Length: 138
Ligand code: GDP
Image (cartoon, rainbow, N blue to C red; front, side, top):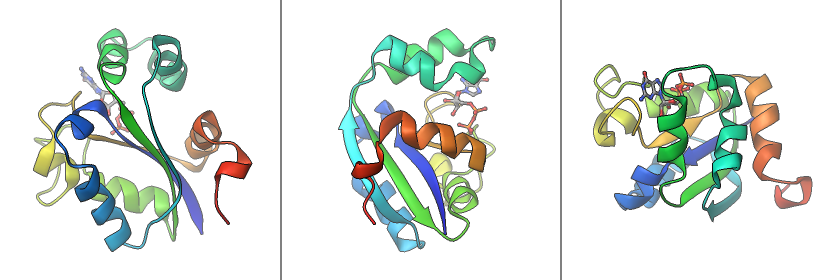
């Protein structure tokens, strides 16, 4: 069993598709181990995306991620990291496969509905960024 961090970004919350996204996770063997809705401060968004701090889109990404509430979840399942990313599709919704969350709902490469950890190392940083051990159900 593997754990991964998922975020429904401000555009997903605004579009009212929290339930639709969660339905896809639960329908594909991913179980929710922790979940909450929060609004990120600028510092919190910058800290979460620090690996991208030199990228040209960093400032815009932080503005987007602080523009409204998000839903953060720790998901668990077999190959949870890959499964979550397969369900999301490619970063750019135009390049994402049909039937993926991003192809179905995202409006741009930035406003792309969902985040999913890209490796066990990322998940190991990202899950504790939002959840303490006692917030993760057994
Ligand atoms: P992910 O793992 O598929 O989320 O993609 P990355 O880790 O490469 O990028 C993190 C997030 O930054 C993406 O999900 C997008 O919201 C945003 N992003 C990535 N590439 C671009 C880009 O070229 N332009 C803009 N404006 N945002 C981007």
